[in-house]
Structure formats: structure tokens, C-alpha cells
Image (cartoon, rainbow, N blue to C red):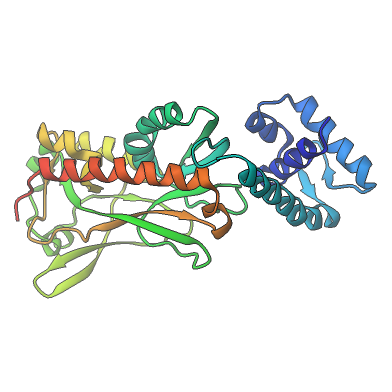
Length: 310
């Protein structure tokens, strides 16, 4: 068994925190995963993980070895880049995260075309509306809507995404049609909110004649999945704040109707996040450039097709 394969396996077990998860990720069996870790431990004469039936925890030696192992893999990638025209023929796996709406509607549909262009690359796409940690989760890059909190990450902004407040006609028929953020709050409208860990209250930033204002909103329905919020809005359960590209077809068919158009939402930036080291990887750069070009065009087209009242 290749010593380098053992190191790669160790890094994925460390980052994913599970033998079985690492095995699935590397497309090898749990038995092979465990065998590679055991061989590495035997070679180093140390225990890299504390194992129980319910948990897998890196030892002090394992934590120390992880940083060195990452450096080894990076050096190998750099060495390969010196002898192979990797810009034209990139190879290896890309680990990419994206919010559910962005991933399903923008990123995932473009992946097959990218793989046709670069047949030796594989893409492992993880879709979630929760905040991700690129370093601990072993991600090459993550798509992002909003403002990142981690100043240590590199950011490549590629669009300002227009958003809309909207609701189903059946909701507006029973609860009224707010024309502004003030009416939305004063009339106690049901606002469908995206729940993040640790969130204690919700604010929508809307554009008013006095500039941007934060409106504190509330509602009985909240979820950590943006598509669930859209489904609730379509079913008439409240008002939702959405990027236009996510609800363009519903707006076009009038299943959702814009509200509070006198105070539209602030646009939100769409960007890619990556660490400096990952950004130097040619296949990561190629994927990012490929997606930025296509996603930007899709978002702009959706916004042009939906003319919101002002």
C-alpha cells in the first residue's frame, strides 16, 4: 500500500472525524480505511486516533501529524504541477460547498459540463444552508451569500444579487398587502425566516427614502433550509425574503407576488470563499472561473426577466 495513500486517508479521517465517512469520501471500504490508518500508526510507532465504539478523536500526536501531512500533500501537488501541464489537464477531487438554493439552481447544473471539459477531475458537492468551516471540513471552496465572518479566508466576489420580499396571493388575501417595511412590521405579518445556529432575532435590511434600515421581523415558521421557506410561502404561510433567481419562476407565474416594494431589500453579494493555499490549486481556480462566468450570467438573466414594481 502506498505510504502517500495512507497519508491522504489519514487527512480525510482527521477532517471528517469518521472512518466510514472518510471511506465513502475516498471511495474505499471501511476495512481499507482502517487498515491504512493502522499501517500509518505502525510505521510512525504512535497512536494517531483514540477509538471507541461511538467516537474517533485525534491524539496529541495525531494533531501534530495533521499539519505536516497537509504540507506533504501540498508539496506533492506542487511537484506534479511542475512536470504536468495541470492547467490544461487538471486532476484530482474538488470539495465544494454551497447554500441549498445556490447549489441546486446554479452550481449543480453546471458541474457535468465542467467535468466534460476536465475528465480527470471529480467534484464532491455539499449543499447546506448552515455555515461551513473550510479548514476543518476539508473544503477547497465554498459559495456564499452575504458577508463572511472569517477574515482569514480569501474572497472572490462575482455578483450583487437582487432580492425580493414576496408572498402567495392566498396569504395576501387574508392578511393584506404591505407596501413598505413599516406596514409589514406594524401589521404583524408572518415572516418566514432562515434560522442559523445562535440566531436570537431576525432583521431585514430594506432600502428606504432615508437610506438602509433594519426592520425587526418575526413569525411562527422558521427553518435552516431556504427551500422549505419557499415552500411555506407558496402554501400561503407568510412572507419570504429571497434572491430573485431562486423564485423567478414563481414570480413569473404569479404564484408569488412582490410585497413592500416601496422599501425593497438590500442586494446581497455572492462570492466564493477559499483559503490562500486552496486558491493556488489550478483545478480550484479553473472551477471557480468556470462557475463565476456561468452563474453570473444566469443571475443577471433572471433579474432582467423579472421587472419588479418600484
